[in-house]
Image (tube, rainbow, N blue to C red; front, side, top):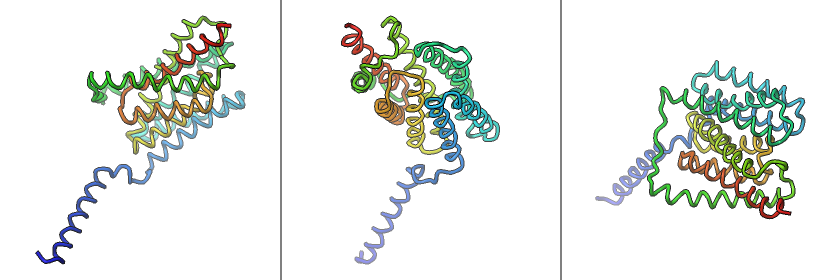
Length: 278
């Protein structure tokens, strides 16, 4: 074959391979699109709500009501974004439930809030999967055997970071450590069921899953800070990014719940061993 023809053949082959690779990974190259902007809008609504609740609670409750109204409008007007809007609406609803019950302690507020999240998340996850069952996670027993110990270690490292920032600001004085430890596991399961199991999973259907993971991580930071779940800003950022990344890669709530619970239990154990002991 002549050199010129050989060169043209090579270029054509590379062009076909490039087009194929773009086609396979085209989701990453697509513009954000209408539903992507809806996702950003709804994330922004909830972040604004949680930020306002932290710094100006009396104003935040009105922003919370506005966020609920906005999410309801999205659910009514946008068919494809309906499930993710309903999933996100669980947060302002749980906030209203917590405000109406008026618990007088951080532990009481967090318990009411997270139990509300958990019950609503379980309900809607069941409803959403009636017609569209979730695919089983492709993780074998050997995979669990390899990854669960790693997730425990990652969770413990995050718990150490939390202890470094919060060792003198333990929010649950006056409650028995076994009760707080059990509650921490429930809190972890509630957070993962809602944020990863519903919001990130449903958001991944609108556009690239990496963007859904990033938005969920940002939401987790503000949600954690507002409801005193044993996290400070640096810890919340690390935890949110780790949890969203693990779910993005493995689509497995067992792994993310293990990290979340291990971090909280490590913090509690360190506080019990070095602070409350005295």
